[in-house]
Amino acid sequence: MPPPVPQPPRASARSWPAALAALLLLTSCEQAARPPSTLAYAGSGTISDTVLPALSRGFVDAGGVPVDARFYVGSSAGMRMVLEGQADLAGLARAPKSTEKARDPYYVIFAYDALAVLVHPDNPVKALTRAQVKALFTGEVKNWRELGGHDGPVERVTVELSSGSGTVDFFRETVMEGASFGPGRVIPHPNDCQRYVAAHRDAVTFLSLSQGVEGVRRLALDGVEATPATVRTADYPLSRPLVLATRGVPEGALRAFLDFVMSPPGQALVARTFVPVRADR
Image (cartoon, rainbow, N blue to C red; front, top):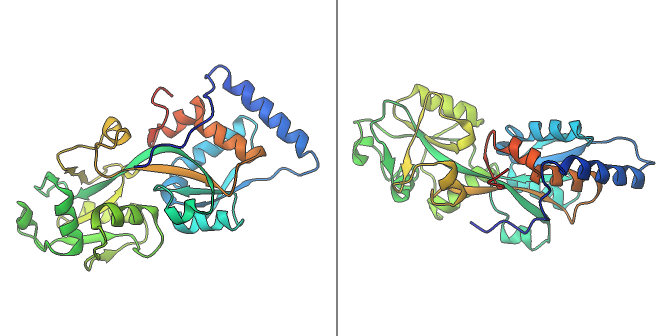
């Protein structure tokens, strides 16, 4: 995982509200002729479906403008829209690609997440290696008994694999290593993938840790459980950064929002769902 990009000096919890107020006052003076607006978000559903609404409400409560998650298009398309000026803010559930970095966006890592491999609670398999997970999703492993489990055909469950999803891109790069996915059941929304696995003993899927474990069980990978500590240090093998990106160096309300996300109040909101960058938040 690439290290976080350098951040500006961190304001204390006591000084943050005054700093935000000063920045917003400056912004309002610079943009006095402009009517109130919103910031248009495009990109990862892992971000927009979880922490973004709380961050938007917190920013508004601090005097900012709403962040409108109007483009649920996946990480790759969201970054493309921002780079082409069609949205203000992109959310990526992965690190930026080299081709994206070549266009010189501004981005911050604001949280850490990880992918979990989920099975039915009655599945006796407790842990796998990354190589075994790859074999599961390529179709090389066809029956759970090949992995020490019950006698039942493996049923692969995924979201749409060609959607530009950061979750799929990260899994494809980190686990599949260029191999193709085997045949499986495609379910559009992650929540429905989880519900399906919870109802079918032979099913397996991979989802963000933010999905929780209702009705399913997470597998340890390479002998490591996914915990906040192992995710932040990347000892858990499927840890990943969550990124917010802009077309260039942000100004005005956009800059104020990113500053809020990285502030102690913003990181406290992030910690409700993900592992915050600021360990002391």
